[in-house]
Image 1 (cartoon, rainbow, N blue to C red):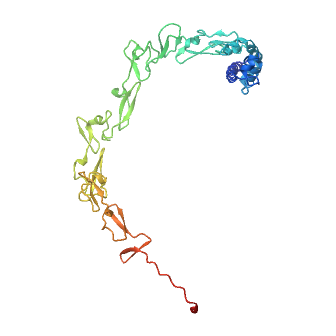
Image 2: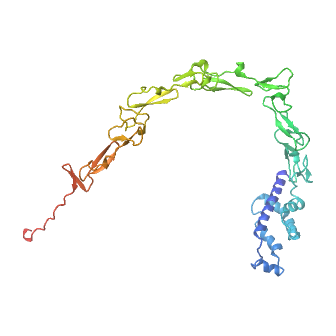
Image 3: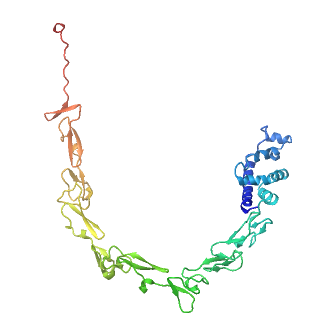
Length: 402
């Protein structure tokens, strides 16, 4: 029998048992038809152990799935016999072991394989010493050969691969295989570059002539690294990176390290100035109060500066400290200082003054000003806003006038 087919039948038997357990739970407390299971059992009719209950359970088992149906074909009579002989008070938790493994012989216990259910290499309790998978484990097929996890080797996965070292001792699951340091090209005797043995990996060199131990080559110090203009060399294990210079460094001179202090020859980009504490530091042009023209405020940016317009609420001659009405140093007509604050302007609501608009007009406040509107049904005439005149009723003409 092919391995795939056997494995499917074993998996199908697991499905069969799971579905059987589900049906068993659903039928707890039910009856064969009278609706009173307690009365039936009093009369000697035990639905709980009857063939009727078995039929009710099996009716919903393996309705779909070729694997489950294949297992049912092989084990149906065994399931019926198992049901007939099972202890009424015993749980059905052992059904898989008793039916699938022991009686139908479709599966093996975990850690065993093949027709005779032999123990996997390393033992059934710890197949492959816990460091791999046993081919066919739990089925009646398979070779039992160990497929070792990464870093492990050997028939029982009790050895470490060349680029790993053994942590712990003994041919059991107590030891682990740990990966050697990246600089070890020919294996190692333990963690760290100093325990490399033989040849070193690219980007590393021997510590000394003894041939034991490796160390990283600093390509930046050795001058063997090539970095483009505007970048600097940064050493990494086994190689190097070329990182971009800080924006404060002059593009023609570049840098030797990261940050403003790494700028080469203390050479700074436009808008920056060098000092011992900070390296190339941004020049704050806004310290000069007269840097920007009247009506604009100074906005400093790294390496540059901008002159931006004040808010419309600000008096142009007075200027401002930022672009918001709160930053005004003086107010334009239609605005007034913000009460309780040393700076800033707010709109004057002219509509709060009764004399702002003439009689009949409706006042609408606007930013820095106001409007006087004559709203319908009122009409504006001769500078006044009045109710529309109602025309008098026209009398009907006399009959002799018709």
